[in-house]
Length: 236
Image 1 (tube, rainbow, N blue to C red):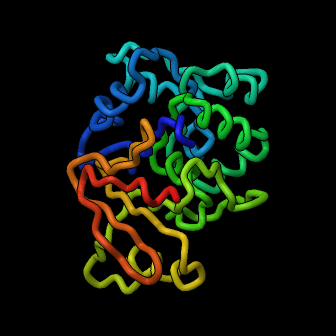
Image 2 (spheres, rainbow, N blue to C red):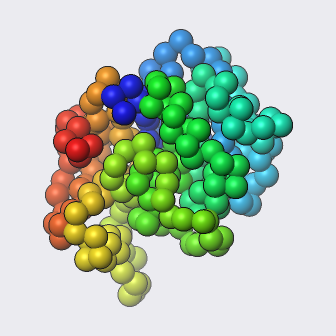
């Protein structure tokens, strides 16, 4: 995957900012001279794909980027093959992965990304970039053929990470949930990224970017990641 060019955002918003506004400079730098973006809206459930695509187009309009929804193409795989760059939006990770399987896109996307096509994901779109979706935060509203995902990076992701527990709430924290994963899978790392931050892989280097630290869960341990830390060792 040395040719891959990935921007894996935790979220589409940071705090009270407008849609994708906190990420625009990251997206601009990531795409460079590319001005056409193929958008995959399959994680959208309570918003239709046309509306979702328009949201992204509006958010990126001042970057002079043309956004096209993959659903507007007759053949989704051919759309990926001809794309200059792709973005995969957030929503429900199970539905997103189900649709990627239905349209037979996993191998096509993986091949294009590994050949150098820029990939941008946020939330669910970042989740599917990992080995599997076993560390998503979403409800399994639909059952994909497998939890195995794009495998653009060979670890798990957990976007929107927070350990906030409202007063009086007796459910598990996110760290407790991820600890459960570590019991059944002692080897695979989970990279947890908080809102406003992203993982970036470019020129053979993986790092955390943004204003906040992240966390690695592996082998029963939780460790901090500071911004700009070289995480390339996680790729094996």
